Image (tube, rainbow, N blue to C red):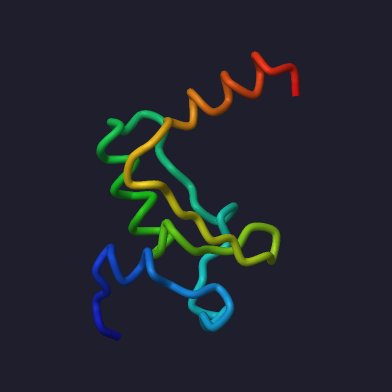
Length: 83
């Protein structure tokens, strides 16, 4: 199996991905005593594709804007709007 770059992982199409190649999110187990960097690397090693994985049997595809508001800013704006 060829090693994919992060860009290739990011560009995974959830409509055509081989479901059997995806990892169930709840199967990932991290050491809470490890450093942040160690946990991050271990998460990526276990999940295989942090942009496309299974959650409860459903395919999840994550994408992020290159620039723009952070998730915290978005959550705060929703909170302040009373939504």
